[in-house]
Length: 309
Image (tube, helix red, strand yellow):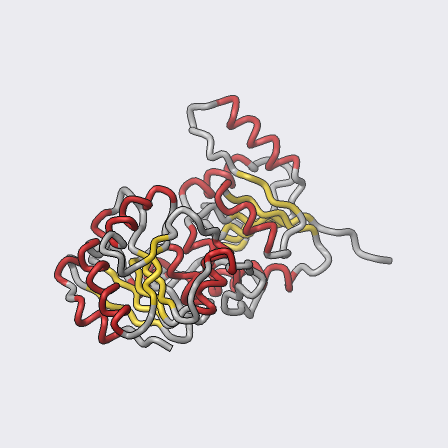
C-alpha cells in the first residue's frame, strides 16, 4: 500500500539574497520528501521564483499582517492550521516565523525545524548566528534529519536576453541595495570611474538595478561610457546575463548572489554595516573587498581585483 502523502511547509520570506541562498535547502527538502506535498510560504516578490524552481507543489504569499490586525491574523492562523502540515521547515528563523509557530499551537501542531521555542527539531547550535547562511541552514537541516544540502543551483532560472542587444563582452555593475541602508553602497562617482576602467579593457559596463535605482544608474551612465538598463531586468534576466558577462562589481545586495552562483567573476563590496563571513555571495570566482566606510575603497583596488573573462 502506498503511504499517504504528507503536507510539508517551508517558510522563506526574503530578502532576495537570502532566498537565493535557500535554493540549496529547498532542493534538499524536496529530495527528503520526494512523494510529499510541499508548500512554500514566501512574500510576493519571490513567489514566482518559488513557482519556477519546480520544487514546490504550492506557493503561498505571506501578506505579513501586523500583530494588531486581528482579522488578518485570524485569517492567517486558519490558513496555517488548515494546511494540515505534518512538518514545517522554518528557513526564515525570525521573530515573525517563530510567531507563526505559536499561531499553529494546539491539537495537530506539526513538527517544526527552526529556532522557535518548543520546536520539535530545534536548530540547537549556539554558534548559529556566527555561521554563513549556507552552512547555518545545512546545519539546521542536518539536525532535522536531512544530512546533505547541495550548493544553490540556479540552472532553472533562464531568460532570453537578446532583446537588450548586448555586445559579446559586457560587465555588470550593481550599484544599488536597500534604500534604507545607504552605508552599504559604494559611491556613484566610484562606479562611474570603474566603468571607465572596464571600458578601457574593451568591455561594455552595464548598469542594472531595480526601478527605484533608475536615477542612480542614470547618474553612473551619464558620461556615456556605461549603459543603464535599470528597471528593465527580471531575476531571470540577471541570471542569464551573469552566465555571459565578463565580470561583475556590486554592493552587498541580492543580485550579486545571483551573479556569483551563476559563475560570473564577481567583486563584492562590503562596508562595516554587514559581515561577509555571514552573508557574502558564494560562487566559483568571488572576491570580497571591505572597508568600514565604502567611500574609502579606492577604484584602483577594485579594478585590480576584477578579473574579466
